[in-house]
Each structure stands twice: as structure tokens, then as C-alpha cells.
Length: 99
Image 1 (cartoon, helix red, strand yellow):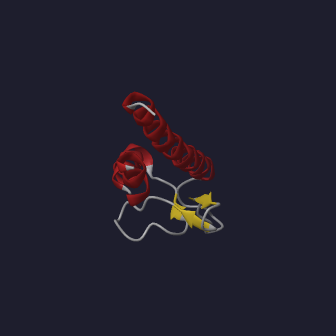
Image 2 (image 1 turned 90 degrees about the vertical axis):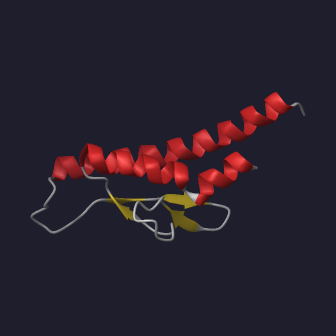
């Protein structure tokens, strides 16, 4: 396998993983906006990605905590930017790129 095809394969997998999380977060953001930031019922929207290989729910944690479990929907443009930063720095995405 040539270097170029390896780079495309590795980068492609990282981009796919990143797009799956981003899609889930954007859907949660849209739902939270639809319901309002403070729901009268006290319900909050959360999101996560189910990882088949280890049967866990994963999200990149903005706070830098362990990235297992559900996360609250991003709040506004700043929340989406923080999510993007956390995503590209997450161990999961970094490990795919460095493979």
C-alpha cells in the first residue's frame, strides 16, 4: 500500500468518525433550539454515538473529562466551536489520524 492511499484511508476514517459525532451534536442542538433552552418540563436534549466495537456511548467532552456517555446539546455558536475543538483533540480522532 502506498503512502498516499494510506493517508487517504486514515484521514477518511477520521473524517467519517468526526462527521458522525458532528451530525448527532447538530441534531441535538436543533432539537434543543426547537424545545427552547429551558424546557417547561425540565427535559434537556443529549446526544452520543454508540461504538459497536466496545458497546459504549461516546462523545468528545468539551470539559476534557473522560469521553464516555451522553453529552448535553451544544449551546449556540460558541458551544459548537467548543465541540469542534474537543472533537479534533479527542483521543479517538487523534488515534485514527496517528495510525
